[in-house]
Image (cartoon, rainbow, N blue to C red):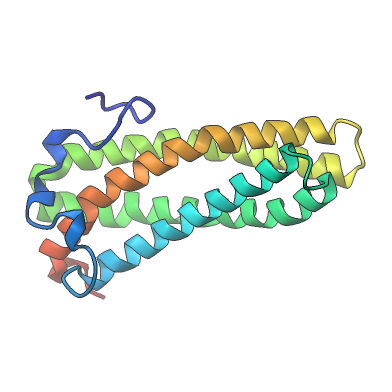
Length: 188
């Protein structure tokens, strides 16, 4: 299996060993550390935001949502999504991932994989920002090309969604069991 985010169909086997002690089927309830549950909630929020943006652009593409309504509903969600995901990744990369490498050295290459994913995803975030800005400026300025800008933003959302979904799943497969196993290092 490839390590490339766009080519992966799941977390490479070498990084799945933590799941043996805490498989996904057992991620409900108190067996999972509070910090890991919080992580899952954050990821769930990102998934909801992407699904909401997909639904809005789908309605617009189907002619069920006017361009000004798309703008009014999509831009605030996009802004929130970009801010939250960027902040989340910065905290992971600079705080949590170094701690994870320290307490579970064997997973270091898996953490490197997640960091590389962040770089790929940040390329998508930049594209979302740029296309979102062009869409906002087009609608705000009543530009005749605002529809083209909306189409480019919708395409950027289409491209970012699967990569983010793959990363979130793979990150959870490492992070949830690791935090639960080493809970004392992640309190406070």
